[in-house]
Image (cartoon, rainbow, N blue to C red; front, side, top):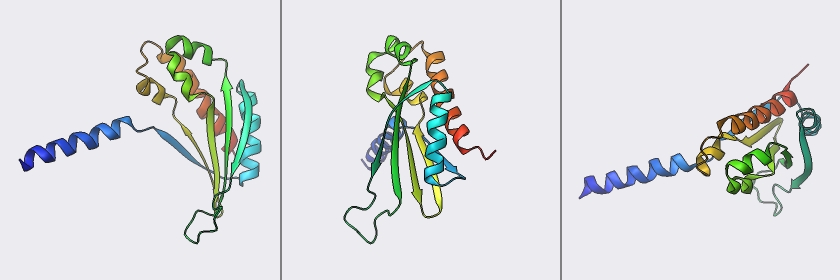
Length: 149
C-alpha cells in the first residue's frame, strides 16, 4: 500500500514538473530604466511591435516582508503570430509576448517565457521552425538589452 502511494506521488510530481512553464531569467548590468529603454529599442530593431508597458506596485500594503522593488511588464507581438495561429490557434492565448523587468535592490532582472513552451503547452506539431524563430527573436531582444557596449 505504501509503495503504491509513493509511486502515485512520484508520478504526480513528475507530471506537474513537465507542465511547468520554462521561464528564462537574465541579470541586466543596467538599472531598470536603462534596461527598459534598451528593450524598447531592441523590440523595434528585431521586428516586433510594441504594445504597452504596465508598472505594478510591488508592495502596495507596505508589508515589511514584501518585495520592495519596481516591476514592469512590456507587451509586444510579431508578424510570426499569423504563422503560429496557422499551426495552432489556441497558442494565441499566450500572445502578446511579455517581458518582465524588475529591480530588486541594486540588481535588475529580465524574464520571459521560453517560446518553446508553446509547443508543449498547446501540443503543436510540425511548427518547430516558427516557434524556434520566435524564441530566437526573444533571446535576441534580451541579449541586445543587456549588452554593455
